[in-house]
Image 1 (spheres, rainbow, N blue to C red):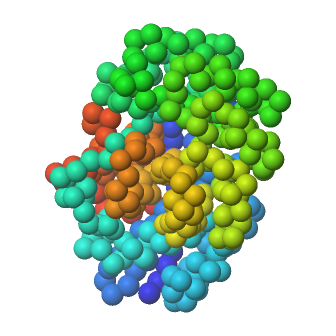
Image 2 (tube, rainbow, N blue to C red):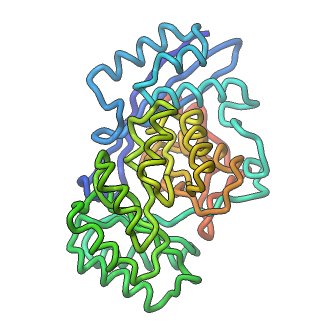
Length: 349
């Protein structure tokens, strides 16, 4: 078996804003395996400024992985604890090598085009008119769950946007989720959550920055609306530490981005622990290309969750790879009439 790695820069169609700043490009890396005339493709979806493995020796580690690929998947995963995005890329690549084609990872009713995955419509930060336009587009496109990023523009403006949605659409019409990306301070977070709760929100993601266990635990205990941990899970790899975090903070939900928490293996550990503690969960992509998104979507379908997942990111980029994944009526579907353009894909890499 031989392995190579390749860097690829995804270009956003429009600069995308979060409370951490505005993104115009997204760096990603691919591992390609070749063995016995077959090819496996995996994506290492690093998020600069957020991923635990955003470190200077990232490419050196990819070189090391390719050089030692014959150690096998399990051994490599054990050596890559501090590189969760590379762990995930390897899991995808090995699974890809086993499939009927590079992209048949978890055959199911989803990949046969007979079932779909409910997803949320993502509203990016921007000025009020831009956010209003996005909201209108998502509702017209058939989404029954909308996730709005908050925390970067004036809080009163964000409240007025939520109010305008609720004037037209009740909680039974549209489920509203908000994501603060840690933008609130512990001192004013509860007050802001109380004001947000007036709009019957499903949940708020990461209201305060990660790593403030005592403050987050207190917030989860007192909150008038459910809190979902996201960034809080990054960098927690030991199963005992994962259990401690959930037992101390007691969140209502956790959100799992496989590229950030150690792939399928790391995500499954979190899910198992969460279910033992009656904590809800859902899966979200981390701005991967359609190659990584395909892997996450196929795996997510096998988990049989009825909640809307965060998998609607495939159309964000101008230079994404054509794939059978498509968003229709607020769901992610697999259009069997569409095929992957392997030649184009490998040329681009």
